[in-house]
Length: 277
Image 1 (cartoon, rainbow, N blue to C red):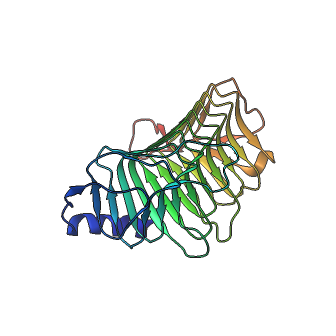
Image 2 (image 1 turned 135 degrees about the vertical axis):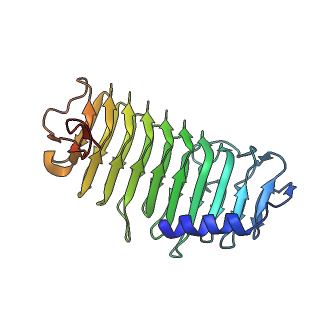
Image 3 (image 1 turned 90 degrees about the vertical axis):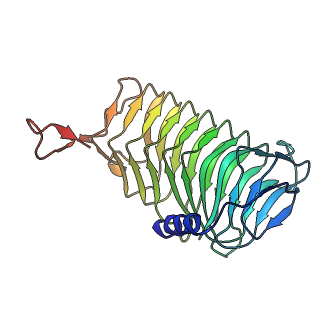
């Protein structure tokens, strides 16, 4: 994931901002593009990004699809990433079976989403085996599933709210780690569902979910410096020792009585050794 971020930063410094232009539904993008208008598509495809290092700047615009149709044979995609080190930023992607799909088949792909609203999609973003997605300063709202990943996934400084399932981390080969940092997961039926080893939550809040965190076959997994507030059930675990919880608070509603919480590490140099994260 560090490689993805470094490539994105280097690209941003070296490349001038492209002139805004209109794009068409189903268009294949092979160079940086900045949208000049909303893109509303009645068919199965919004944009396909097919060249490494490309940045798609939505510039406050939205890419909207045909809406969700039960029993439709072909899944619609707002943005399909068929390349590496792709960046999508600054707009709304809504009304698709899959808002953003990062790769398919056996070819590894990678993308970063920043300041993006994934809303009212079947799945906001999909990350198949071998691919990776870094999602930051974004909002996943009102989807059946906010994001589902068999590949590598990092969700940082983002909000995940009012989805049936906020984040689903499934088994995959190779799977890779999942990290959730500095984020808010709230008012979902299931906040985070993890079925794969390699799970880290730091400095995040889970609030008013029916089930905040469901972990099965998810060892090793760690929650640190976080808060669980007014969830119907804070934790659903396949075994009480399946999760290491450190410096984390729980409101009384939702438990968990059976999961020990390790204390915060003492800070050096502070008055009285005040606990920290």
